[in-house]
View 1 (cartoon, rainbow, N blue to C red):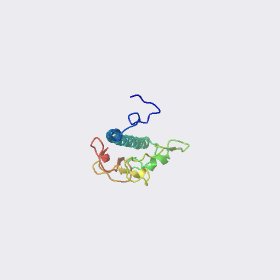
View 2: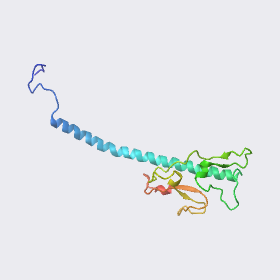
View 3: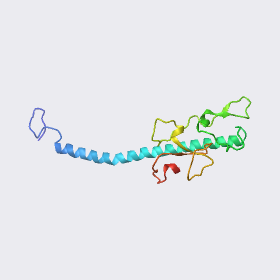
View 4: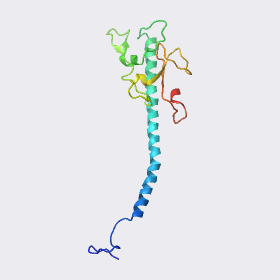
Length: 166
């Protein structure tokens, strides 16, 4: 039966039934429940990549500081390892002993924050676990210098390795 604008019969009225609307909502719900875990996984992967990048930046800066000390740019005592005393030394800078103008050597602009650190109120430097040159890899301890950093966050990555061991 053709639709006429003046017709008011039920066969001519256009619209969706309640069953059609419910089926549509169920389909949308199923699709959303499939997409949500993928979105969470993507966010988690991004945070893990941020952790890798931050560890690489800090470790590269620690090695550059040590190299500068070995080359005589940073004065140090005989009994010191040559690594910085704190992470903040990487951003504050140290006097270049070989530069007559006395400009400081800086190794990082800012210290990256541990993306898995549970407390957002602490500084970026305090969000990391610190390991001194005198401590072992298996049992890292804070000491007179900063030889390495690690994530203090509990848990393991998607690869099964604890964040602490990255």
